[in-house]
Length: 352
Image (cartoon, rainbow, N blue to C red; front, side, top):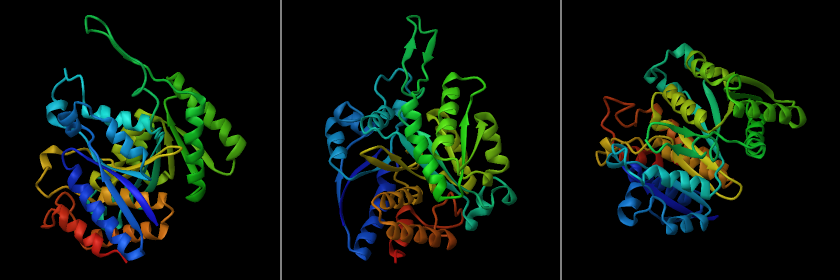
């Protein structure tokens, strides 16, 4: 199989972790007889510095002419710490999601047996945790109309959703539940927000008409945040809107002991992008301490997207082997001496 992959490494540790994911993909291509062609493009702070635009037109062209996008991370302190900055790296990512119509963000959360003791939560709370979050990605408050009064003392952000936006991601989440443990939880704030009441109504009607075999329940987002700490193993598939999903998925990331373990896929009708959920971690840039596993697991999700399921499973098995043997970066293996590159080397050589 031949696939063209757009590589948007971005800022901070992005280039470092993406390099290790490419190393693993190259090992997969060699072992299984595939060809992966990579085309690199700018996004985020580095793109602003070089072009003035966080998402240059050339980058978007590279993405739309590729079979998938492998994304690193964006963000830079010189923009993060400047509230008056008119152009920001994050605008590039939001624009990319919108331009490619990547409406569904998929984030698996798993507690690895070999890392149970590294989690800040007790073993009896997190043992057996294995769920996936379906977060709507192109609507809601992040993309709604924004206003600021002339005196700068009043601001608003509109949370807007349509029935069709809700239905298209709900279909994906219900179908995923059927392939897992047949349970889906909608997280909303329907006791307060009209947009959440629309979510609940649309998902309930879809459940009754097309997915009555799936167990469906509902949680308000504040209760869901608490339940994710008290009993995360209760969840199978979580469906939620954009901002709630952003917050809930980062909360879920600590269950496994490190945000550096969590992969994600952003899927649309035509395009797909794969990225770790962590940020650019500028403090760690160039120090060899960045955990590449989330990006490597994102590459595994890309292989699944290509219907290369055996290859994806080989990557996940190699990651499991690295974790079991303590071949991890310092935030997981504090006593170890393994660098970002060491972890990538070990996983790529473990592909069988």
